[in-house]
Amino acid sequence: LPSGPAPVLIFVPGGAWVVGSRALQGHALMAHLVELGWVCVSVQYRASPRHRWPSHITDVKTAIAWTRTHIAGFGGDPNFIAIAGCSAGGHLASLAGLTPNDPQFQADLPASTDTSVDAVVSIYGCYDWVNRSTPDRRRFMEFLERVVVRRREATSPQVFRDASPLHRVHPAAPPFLVIHGSTDALLPVADARRFVDRLHTTSTSTTRYIELPGAGHGFDLLDGSRTAAITTTIGLFLSHLRQPVTGSRSASRSGAGS
Image (tube, rainbow, N blue to C red; front, top):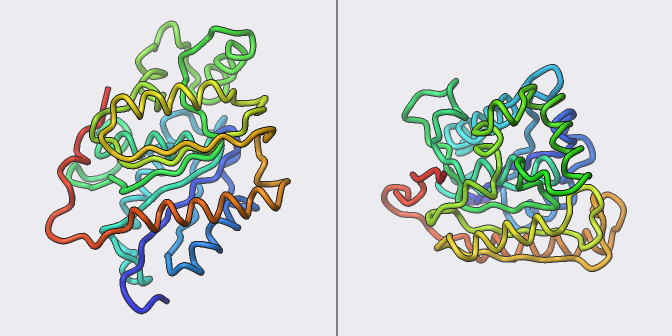
């Protein structure tokens, strides 16, 4: 355990909202951060089709609340909690970061529960559950309707919009680091660019974007050199943000965006 309260990272795995397993995901990043003196928490969440949206984000919020309550017993600092994820996990991490204390996503928690985070790292994440502008996007929306949400976007548009990080950005958003491959065939890089543009124009916090030339979806599972470079970069980004926190937690985290 670290000698003093250590900054904390919660890692959320990907898997198209139908897996949610921690196996083989985030290990390089968490190992690197542990070497830097961080405490890392790897979580799982209920997955579709057995469980419908918003069970996934509800579980992530519960993990944040559990971490804030219990992490001091593991040497962690409950006053500095970052969250990261890849693919569907990037979506969930981003949405969690942008919707602190939003009652629609934490109905299982007491009303006073703090689910804010101090930073978000999203790796080839998903940011838009509304766009149907291309055949691929329409197929993706059909997958969400049929498997994940189990509702039609036409009849429940607010459910899909509220689940889209792109549409939840607000001025008090936490610092973000967004990482995406330029040749991602599953989640188009254009969506990441739009999300980052929205953060840049709306959020008052730091936003950083890394676009990896020639990298596809899941590059960190296949490309050791890129994975090493990215984990180092994430460590630098998060360590730079780490500041001693005194007094009450920032009230600026209380807004949930719309």
